[in-house]
Length: 99
Image (tube, rainbow, N blue to C red):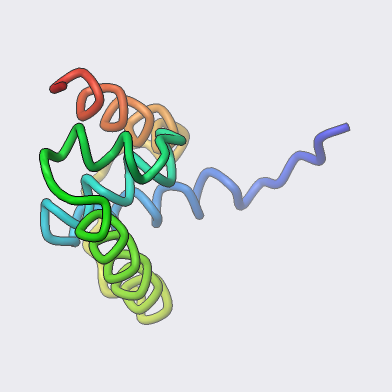
């Protein structure tokens, strides 16, 4: 049984905002692998680069995102916190459709 966490939408929105601050290549790799559930090999095909490049981008993105979230170094954009997961998954869908 899932436990409702009233802070979950806020945390997801902070994640969405932090993702928006990453360089595009890192953000795309992390969204594909993290939110989209794609294997590194699939993400490499989508990004048109080597698997090692995707792994490197994901690793750098995770470190940068952690730093952004820990410091709160992101700007709010007024979007509803409850829409954060939908926005992240929509990005994953958009990126994967670029094949």
